[in-house]
Image (cartoon, rainbow, N blue to C red; front, top):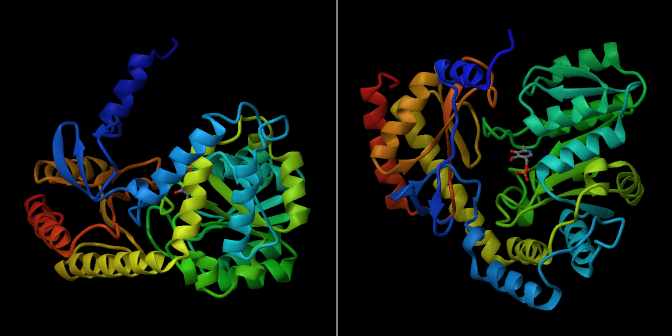
Length: 390
Ligand SMILES: Cc1ncc(COP(=O)(O)O)c(C=O)c1O
């Protein structure tokens, strides 16, 4: 008998995996009003606090006044506006790449770029903890998927020796979105050279945050020139929306001709492009440095305090600080109890993370105050003890 929608929902609910949305009214700041309650926001990717920065808002408003509200078409029809090209040049300057191409989102970038590069006769080597949009891109490509253990470049070497054929692509998050650790990029670059592969890094969580001027994880580790595709997003630290691929001019031409999410979708509107342009400028300014220093200090304080208290936190050094709990049900109880304490930290469950590794994923912002975080840490410890997680 056909399974009803109700059965399916009940199945999800009975495993403690039912998800729903929560509504923020007002701005995406360090404190938000969520479903009517004021909460300290500890699960936003607005790491530098740019989502409500006046410079980005002013740039967006001016762009709407000058260019209107929509691009009206996809990029290859009539939807390439002056702002798309200006943003692409700004990104190429920022990332020190030959060229750049804008995508409508990080998900659209990964599902567009990967199938543009590899197909049935090719192989993709992918870290087991890569973001779901990378997995979606690989599935769409039809390429042979070889997954390696998280950050285990020695196993990657063995697998490349065994499976390399056709065009090979190695793909990894730069900063892992649910774990907050950084990929061993220098080792990945060595393997890419050894096997003549392409290397793609998804730096959604490193862009704007890591390395000189916030150029990202590859810049931080001194290997930017060894990475063929540096994908990054505008919707996290850059406080806007959309994504980019920083690539060679040749690769850009290929993506324009082959990436279906680029070709078959209306391009980003002027207001979004202008906010992204303002953000790319801001992250490279002295103000960007101050925000990164603040974010770094906040992240260190929060991570060290929770680790010192005895929580299970994976090794890492970034603004993403997960407490790994294991059970999906306990994770959601923890999250609910924190809400009652005025803290908004989202529980993350399968399929976003592997089964048995449900977690509370805390993310820090440059705009959190020390007092905000000290108070939060105290309440997290109290709830953790109460639930037997600590
Ligand atoms: C590592 C990573 N890649 C890609 C994406 C998708 O980016 P976007 O939200 O712009 O679609 C995300 C998050 O959403 C992410 O964490």
